[in-house]
Structures are given as structure tokens and as C-alpha cells.
Length: 110
Ligand SMILES: [Zn+2]
Ligand SMILES: [Zn+2]
Image (cartoon, rainbow, N blue to C red; front, side):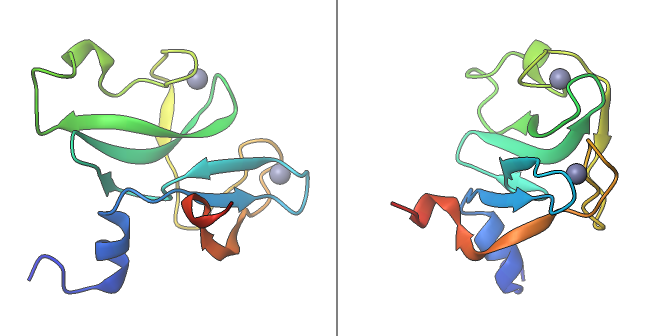
């Protein structure tokens, strides 16, 4: 079953989570893993150039809307020096461990 796990179901809603590093204060709003919005499939990666955690578009269900030139590149610098974000959630700035904000998806904040 595709939606067997609650976590997968959550990610498929395209939610963003606030991750923050207690070591250096760096924070990022990303999906935290493989995600699938209506148009784009994204994966959370570290851009070595920007030293940022970013959601990278890795594929699309509607090829007419996204040029393949835009796939697998950093949304900030358009580079492709990307590393998949490890389950251990390493901070790209200080190599500490980033923690997810326990209040849940930032889209629910007001
Ligand atoms: Zn840090
Ligand atoms: Zn970048």
C-alpha cells in the first residue's frame, strides 16, 4: 500500500518543517526528505556551495511545467553541488545535528 505509513502520507502533502541547529542557530524550512507535491517531486539536500539545506526538484509529473534544466539543481545558486540530506540531519554550517521544530509543519503557523 502506497500510503501505509503516516510519515509518507504527511510528506506527500508537501509540508515544510522548520529545522534548526542548536549549535550555531542555523535554520531551514524544508520537507526533510523525499516529497511529492502536485507538480514537483523534491528531495531535501545540502548545497555545498551555499551551505544551506534546500529542497531540490528531482522530477515532475507534469514535464510541460518544469524544464529538465531546472531539475537536480540548487534553488538558491542553481549549482549542482548537492548531497542528499542524511537521516542524521547534519548541519551544513557546523556539522552539528539539526532538530525539527516539535510544533510540526510551519504551514500551520500563523
Ligand atoms: Zn549548526
Ligand atoms: Zn546553492
